Image 1 (cartoon, protein in one colour):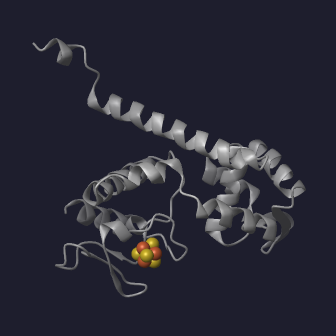
Image 2: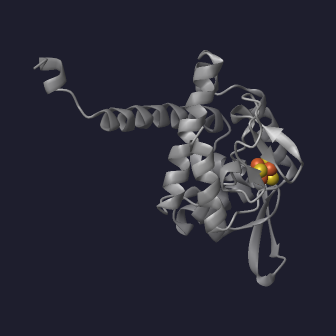
Length: 215
Ligand code: SF4
């Protein structure tokens, strides 16, 4: 037997290690960028989450989305509010509860953040386009599996949306369809945080998923 194969780790273990290394680079990148503003990566993630949701969020929702404890979010929120990057207001459906939203200073900070390419964007942009699309599909599969097994909250991805129609067009560049805007979708244009997302019921989600991965 080839001694290299004998001592080799299983492929899934090497993939998990590779993803862990990439997450270290992403976290370090966020440390650098938000650190310059005197913020932690968690505080940066809270700002990015509030921006993507475009609506006030309860503290408990933020904690659940970021898979951290409410206590961690609470400390971060206090700092962000002190720096006037976010505002706290009464939740529209419960006057005793608080909801968080971006303040104009927070919006300005994020527009600077979004103008710069992250280190991962830069590295990924050097991959050939077909490899980028294949990687995106594989990552969507991993994210969905994590959602189905309850490891992360439901992300607002096309593949879990009731408006998603997978593989309904003959066009190999744009085989899918969004029934909400009545427009074709390609793998590269699938969304992973769509504000119009409306979760499909379990049956439709499973049916769509099978159709999506069959291509
Ligand atoms: S509404 Fe958004 S998430 Fe749903 S299929 Fe259309 S683009 Fe995708």
